[in-house]
Length: 161
Image (cartoon, rainbow, N blue to C red; front, top):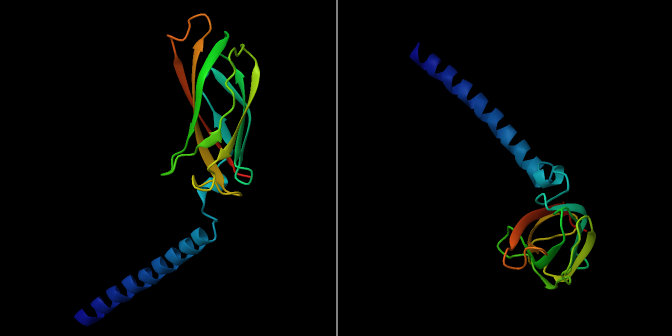
C-alpha cells in the first residue's frame, strides 16, 4: 500500500510541475515579444505643479530635440532663472542648446521652449518607445525679487519620435 500512495503523490506533483512550466514559458514568450511591456500601455502625460500648465510637448530622438509649451498659472508675473532637464537613467538627459529664458513671464502667457543637441541615444530615448524627462523650473515673483526663488518639478512621459 505504501508505494501506491507515494506514486500518486509524485504523479500529482509532476502534473502541477508541467502546468507551471507551461505557464512560465507562455509568460516568457509574451514578455519577449513586448506584449507585457507596461510602458506601451501607459498613456502620455505631462505634469507640473499648480504654477505651470503643460499645453504640449514632444521628445524627438531623430532630431535630438525636446519641445515644451507651458502656460504660466502663477497668478502674477514671474522671472525664470533656470530650467534644467534630467532623467531617471544612469546617463542624465541633457541638451547642449537650452532655450532662452523668458525674463518677464506674465500670468496666463504661453511660452514655447525648445532644447536642441540633446543626448537622446545615450540617455535611452529610442524612437518608437516611451521616455520620461524630468524638468525643474526655478523662478521668482517679479514683485518679490530674486531673493525669493521657488522651484517647481515636473515630468514629461511621452512616446519618442
